[in-house]
Length: 421
Image (cartoon, rainbow, N blue to C red; front, side, top):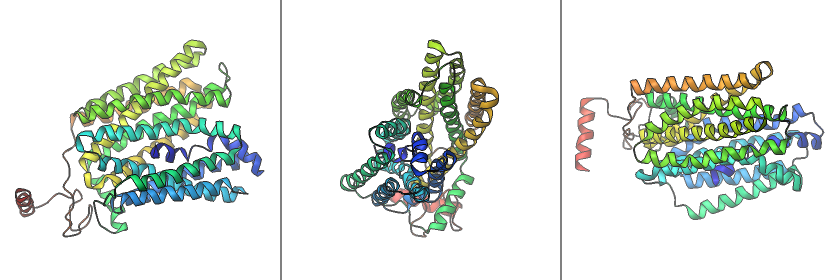
């Protein structure tokens, strides 16, 4: 619930832009900055705020960010001008990245034999939040106006902040280090871990395909032969919810040791979804059925892949789950940004078949990356946590980037500690 509600905050404004622009007396181009600012705030927070989950008490961090989000949303609802609205929305975007702190928090609270299922459940909530945000915003705006949408979101954030503070036990941070060293350790992890790099590339592929679909499908459905209005177009997001719900099965498969099979199946399904989606261009019942089936398949594939990626990197770096989440999601966001720009450029030239071809090429790139992983597997056993006695962190001068002992003497000392334990 928290993941879905938090990430929905940056999507509520998308169907409201014409109304917001008209109310504030600005052009639609200027009003479109609301979405841009929220995305920029979210991206910066992914890189700079989410890593704090490894060095701060997570329950308090999550509650504080949800509370700040509630205040910022209320400020957005009360904004008398575009300038104040943009400022409030920037804070909303930054605090909404709390969703990516909740995921490693849930993974830490879960027993190891259920971690994949827990991550799948939480991530399904996140994707469902993205899918239904536009529908909720449209319904509330129809009942009242766009201010009501942000008031509703503010109340929801406040309720969740209090609830999580009351029901969760404190979650001690896995490490103690300085903030600059914390950020530097993310770079060190990416450089040292081939598993993380490959999963980052696959995350960019999956989110890229996801963005191509949802960017271009609005154009497809608004133009002939469909000619649907915004309300009808928004209902197609419910097909994505079905894919997200079914994907929770992927978490149970991951827990049973079939994570690599989940990744393989997800990439095959991602690739096959594009020929099915291409049929939607013919219109009529056949086109609609193909579009719905393609949406369900692609969202199922994307969600299964994300679950597999997070389970793999959380197992590999149990002491740095917030930081590897940062690396994974920044890569996914970069893939989404590039795919969005390519889709916007290609659709006017090549139409729906052209963007389906783009999506297929992106998916095939992911297949190539995964074939490399199957041929030359990356290390997957858990890394040892950095020594608390020396204060060494990942990427610090006194410890290797992986946190593992480097020399024979260090290895022997480590073995002796394990024997005594």
